[in-house]
Amino acid sequence: MTVLKLVWKNLLRRRGRFAFTLLGITIGMAAFVALLSMGDNLRAEVTHQADALGANLIVMARADCPFINLSVLTGDHLPEAIPREIVFEIAAIEGVTGAVPYLTVGSSIRQVPVSLVGILPAEMKRHRGWDVHAGAYFSHQEAREVVLGYALAGRFELETGDTVTLRGEEIPIAGILSATNSNDDITMFMPLCITQEIFGLGDYVSFIAVTVADVTNIDRYISAITDIANLSVSTNEELLGSVLLILGSLNVTLQAIASVALIAAAFGIINTMMTATYERRREIGILRAMGSRSGIIFRIFVLESGLYGLLGGLLGFFVGFGVSRIAAPVISRNEFVAVVGTPDTAVAFSVTLLAGVVALSVVIAVAAGLYPAWKAAKLTPMEAIRNG
Amino acid sequence: MADYIIETLDIEKIYGNKAKTHALRGVSLRIPRGGFACIVGASGHGKSTLLQLIGALDKPTAGRILLEGTDISAMNDNAISKLRGEKIGFVFQAYNLLDNLTARENIETAMLFSSQKPAKNRAEALLALVGLADKTNAKPNELSGGQLQRIAIARALANDPPILLMDEPTGNLDSQSEQEVLQHIFNVHKAGKTVVMVTHNREIAAKAQLVFEIHDGKLKEGV
Ligand SMILES: Nc1ncnc2c1ncn2[C@@H]1O[C@H](COP(=O)(O)OP(=O)(O)OP(=O)(O)O)[C@@H](O)[C@H]1O
Ligand SMILES: [Mg+2]
Image (tube, each protein chain N blue to C red):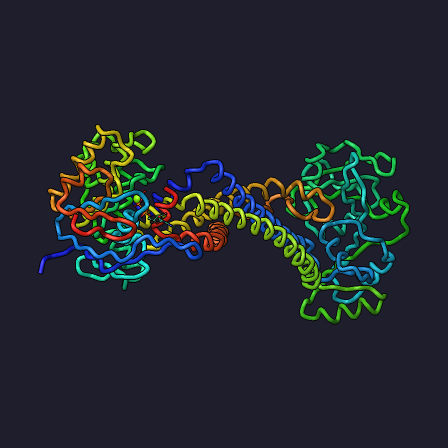
């Protein structure tokens, strides 16, 4: 017989209550893990997209809303606000090696929202280094065709030669791009002028990705661009920084939600352990009469609640981890967090994370068990007689 | 000077804060090592109270209790716990076994509370001693009252304490089971333990070396 065996036997005595209390802490920890890894996902993905954009500077219309930065990275619809001739003027600045315009438009395939980006086919292909997976790339700069990202084609089971309907017009699919592991995979592309025409937009673009020859002289390029027009110019890092700031507050929100679940679970443990203390007064009295120090009684109860934390942490980790993996692609269809869950972005399994989660769970459970354990330890051997 | 293993000096016990019950009013007694003592008396006169105080399960309101010459009233809680584990075996009228543990586990649990490491298979040996070698893995709800009380005696002996205290150990048993249990108690006494037993049974009391009759919280002289 050991104290631990005694604890384990006590734990399993009321199987229903054991299961429900365990479920409470498991759900709490699972929520915590799922929300945490989704937050991490988002972060990793945004960083990845910022790299994938491959630009040194992003030129946008001036706006107060910081979410506009997020849209650049998610490929969501941005107002078309920059006259196209600005693109050429920027491209003409000395030292600018590329100025690639994007016109983002919200469209849909079979009623599912899909990002459509109007581009200059030749410049874009060079800038992004695309390969064509199936079919052909745009036959010329003003081809009335679309090219689909790899994952997008897969999701709607579209092939070269099929058509998509945009504003009532059937547009043939010229080709499908090879996977890039970026946002491009879930985007539909069309030549800029055709996009403007079909959607009835003037000769404007949403933003311009600029590459420069000498990144150490970035300020000079920024002032050269702002001399041309009153535009907002951000470096890749600034863009990323401001987006991560938004995600940071999103993370805090998610974690606050998870904390509520954890607090509820902690009260579940307190409740179970208080009940156990009350129910087992006689047994505690017997143990005390047999010579148990009050410290051992305290330890028995703390261990018992600690075991809830250990088991709940382990189960919760795997449940939460599983949920975040399953949920990531589903969430990625949501407009706001469209960046999550493009291929290969789910959080990697990590022993450190597992250990951290289990440790947190145990700490919470032990803390929840302290008061009941203290109550139990205060009982005297006379309880064995009074409740006998 | 004789070797008194148990000594009480003028102990008083008052229960309750508002409605006070004066359960013991100055009890002084001495029991020699290896003795067999019975505490008798009418119901509600303080027998159990006295036994619980000797067994260090409760503290007297006043007076002193000496076990093996040591005053236990001065001890802290941990020291008293150790004393309960190593010096005293207590057998309750209501058996008080742990219901979710088997006979063997009940005895092994008691062994957790002694600083001595118990010999291997001691639990089995103790169960054999009380004639229950075949009930090692039985749970309390599978056993009769007599069997439960024998397991309780075996548990009380788990850490080989010098003192065995029993509060009406046969009070809930039929006469057949009572005889069995008594036989084991006598055997334990013969093996050298000091035995103190509360009983209503005059026949049993007649076999004891010492009899303390308690009346209204006081010892009756000259019994
Ligand atoms: N925990 C307690 N709280 C208050 N009063 C108590 C308590 N325990 C015992 N008493 C009272 O103390 C007195 C002595 O009780 P005790 O249990 O010692 O009697 P007893 O001689 O063992 O009786 P019985 O033969 O019925 O077991 C009784 O009046 C009883 O009501
Ligand atoms: Mg009594």
